[in-house]
Each structure stands twice: as C-alpha cells, then as structure tokens.
Image 1 (spheres, rainbow, N blue to C red):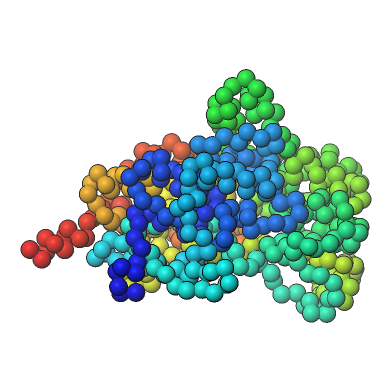
Image 2: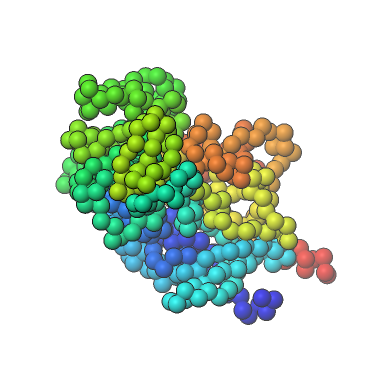
Length: 504
C-alpha cells in the first residue's frame, strides 16, 4: 500500500451511486467542470435504496416534485411514484449526464485515512468480482463526499422475538424480500406501523387471504392524492421546467407549513389528522386505539397513504390492524400479551432500519481514529476536526433530495473557493466563541427509533450557526449559497506549501 503507484488518485470521490450520489456527480460536473470525479458503489447497480428494496408496493413517501432533483423535472402524471419509476428516473439521469462511466461498482469503502502532509484521503476499498471473491484496492482524493445514505444495507432492524425458532411458517424482512415469495391466499401478519408496513398492507391485501398489521403503538397517518392536479395542469401550458419549479415551490412550502404548525399547535394538527381518519374509516373503526399515537405529530415522520389505499384495504375487510404487544411466536403464528393468537402463514418483520454512521466507514485523521459522536456538525454536512469531507443527510421533515441538492451545491462552492484561495485543505474548527455552546442532538425533537438507537454515535449540533443542523429547507436554500466562509469556523490551509516553506 505504501507504493503510491498502486493508489488511484482523483479530485473528488463520491461514495454511493444512489439518488444522492448521482445528483452530486451532476452538480460537480456542472459547477466544477475541471474536477475529476469518481463514484464508488458497493452494489452492482445504480439506485441505492431504490434498487435494494423490492417488496410489493414499494414507493416513495414523498412526492417526486420534491424528491426529484432540482435540475431534472419529474414529468410523470403520478406524483407518489413506485420504486421502479424512481429507479428509472435515477438511471436516466446517470445516462443523460454521462455519470455511469465514472462509477466503480461493487467497490465498498472500508477505511478512509486523511493525511495533512498531502491533504489527501486514502481509501481502502473491498472490490468484489463476479464470483463473489474480494480483493482490496486503494483510491485517494482531495475531497470526499459521502452519499451512501444512513442505513445498513446488509440487514434491517430485527429485534429478537421469543419462540421465533418454533414458528413453522415463513418469516421475511422487507429489506430482503424473496422475489419468488407466493403470498396468494395466505394469511399474512406484518409486524410494524411505519411507512413500510403501511405500504405492504394494501399491496399484499390484493392477493392474500388476509393481512394483519400488528403494531405495539400507532403512527400518524395522512392521505393525499397520488396525482398532483396543479403539476399536471401546469405541464399542459408551461415548459416542464417551469411547471416543475412552481409545483416544487408549492409542495416545499406546504411541507414546511405542516411541520411548523405541528410544532406550534400540535393539538390542532392532531385533531385534524384524526378527523380525516374518522371520515375515511367510518364511525365504527377504533381510531383512538389504532391510529392515535402517544406522541405529537412530527415527533416522528407522518406516514403517507396515497389515494387512501390503506383505508380501502381496511374498509373492504381484506386487512385489519391489531394494537398489542407480542408475547411469543408459536408454531402457527403469534401469541399476543392479551392472550389472542394471530394465525399466519407468512410473518413480515417490518420493524425498521438499522442506521449506520458515515456509511460504516472507519475514519482516521493523521493517524487518530475519528469518533463522530464527539464532533460538531457544521451546517449539518461538515464535521469539526475532519478535513475535506462532507456527508449528505436529508431532512427528517421534508424530502431527502432537497437537502442532498443543497449539500452538493455547497460542496461545489467550497471546492471552487478553495481553488481560488490556493488552499488544498479546509477543516471545520470551533472558534473561541463556540467552545462553550450547549450540545444538542443531531436532530432536535425527533424520537424515531432508528435515530434514538444510535444517537450517541451521531455528531452533535450547537445552539448557533454555523454549528446547527437546520431542518428548514427554505431557510437553507437562502442561507447556504451565501453562508460565510471567512468567519473563522472553516480553516483553509495548504500543508504542502507550508512544509516547503519550513524546509527552506
């Protein structure tokens, strides 16, 4: 590894070729045309999440006018897109902008080591061949941009359940859905109450004998039309880009209004959401038991039900909801703490995601291991003491790609500024005025399980800019393009020139 000719060097390495990574590559190509960019993707195909998840009904839980890229209009009639359509959108973007030729597939980054002497990252990468054999290769770059998402692709969150070995049916986690699984005329129990469970229930209910969504506690649910009437109207009389931009503005404003209203008047929003449910499900459905959470709206994400498909399955008797705790698996199903037993031919454990920090990569800076839980987040994308690296992490209250686009554009601005200064290294650094600030969690007022399980491993945020992790898209859209780079929180340097000066 010490032999430099065995290390392939480029200007920027993007880790991940999913929705964020492909978008970042396009932004770099457009805004930093002189930079050489390489993408390292651990899987054999483009798409990330949208290629990995293949369970029935897989779809977005955000509209595509905000989940889509800011540079590529979504022109399909359906705003809440199925997984195959989103995957096609990502692939068409990669081909339209010639990104695919820059991707190294089945390249999993294991370790990343930064040297201030060279102002470079060196990456140890496990490369898999067509036979499943792996070898280690090495890449280096000036700047590292993580676009690998936030959850473990190898396994989802699957808590142990007593008696699971006694169950004689089929157990499936949605993250590893067998494409040959036959659920026709079968009794299916789905454990979970999040977006995945609420997607699976109506999809499976079309062919299964019966589907039960088994939840420990309810989740807030909201229905909206699958088609955006304004977007479809505007496309008939305006260019696609104009229609897309107007719809995107409208939908982001609506997202932020609902979120802010949920924080300022939670009881009012709660009453409105439950009123919509009562109207959709009728007076005989126990809304209080099955759809009234113990927390306020947006303490966790709202679950989106396009065109009320979940309600249709429940009203039609093909599906039901059971709110109870599991006592144990049995040979033929699940015994609940209430004493009731649910019979099941198939049990789907839609129990959530397993979050990983910074793609699960081991980081070192000048020989010292990086503990990201001890770092401070610079505007939600850079980290104190970690040079030349940014991480893409979307909003919890809006579409992921809104933040991904802003992050990529900011990285381009930062790289261009470094070139103008003649700087090879930029390091987020606490100023004297920052050292006494109060530490806050990576995301405030959000108690989703996948965050809480790793909160100690995530970077901290402070109580003032630039050390806050904003969850306000419209604020970020205004401030990030002009955020000061000369306020002392970013230290620019050229270690190689400084070493030469010392040597002379």
